[in-house]
Image (tube, rainbow, N blue to C red):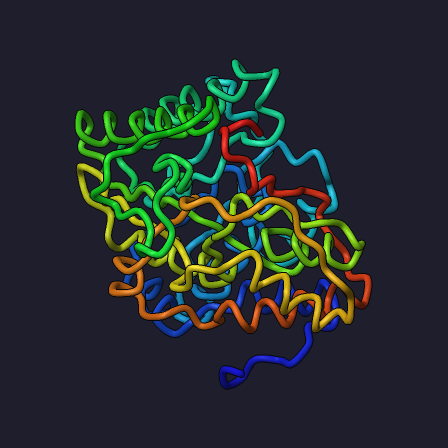
Amino acid sequence: MPTGLPRSIADVQALEDLLSEPPEYLINSMRALEGDVVVLGVAGKMGPTLARMARRAFDRAGRRSRVIGVARFSDERQRAALEACGVETIRCDLLNDAEVDQLPDAENVVFMAGRKFGSTGLESLTWAMNSYVPALVSRRFAKSRMVAFSTGNVYGLSPAGHRGSQETDAPRPVGEYAMSCLARERMFEYFSETLGTPGVILRLNYAVEMRYGILYDLARRVAAGESIDLTMGYFNAIWQGDANAMALASLAHATSPPLVLNIAGPEELSVRTTCDELARLLKKPVTYTGREAEDALLSNGSRGWTLFGQPRVDARQVLEWTADWVARGGANLDKPTHFESRDGRF
């Protein structure tokens, strides 16, 4: 076990404290960063802990810069929790150009808004969120540094055992969700190049924590005695706390045209091997259907590790935490990843 990490994560508060703990490299980066940070789409799965990490990093760096979280905030408790941690909040519908125009200036913007699940049947809304909103935001924050979350889905499937897709690979999106995400990237690229806005495009694949993600999905299925489909037989996973830190630290690397950066764990994980280990830890039998295809949605995160160092939490540690969490009946976000989808339908 890496030094300083707990053997078990007691509850949601302990989990969120751990997910928002800034590493030393981020504290140093935030110490040198000029200006405030606005997090657009802060109310999603990663946003609250990323915003809190930014606040904690500024505090430890002795900086008084503001961290401002922007979202619709359908859950008022989430907004109150952010405010309690020192994150200012603004309620805003990012599809409303008048509301976007009223957002405060900030030297640094982290764009986390987007739509994935439920895209099938509501494709027009998915395209609006994933391509129209980036255009509105790019115009509004033309003078800011911009870090925009994207997804490894834009690459399409790549052969297993070959380290995954690299940033220099041509995108081959499958399905309307992935295509709309490539459109999001193209909007940020266009406005970066025409307006001179420095940016970073983060292709995430995939963030995990105890309440959601591929490891949680697999652990829940094993615990429930459900068969595991092996067709999408391999995957990447990165601890959400590491993904948060890399995203914030990437503000210092913004360029025009934007830097493209994969955010992915260093391991290529096997669904079968992972579930065998989860079954052992959970003391449950596991059954499988299908067989592993020769390709999967895999990304090569080595460029990010070169910039920021290896992740603090490896996949083995997250797997053990997840099995323990599921065995104790820990809370979940009820947001399945549908990572097994090979046709791009979510």
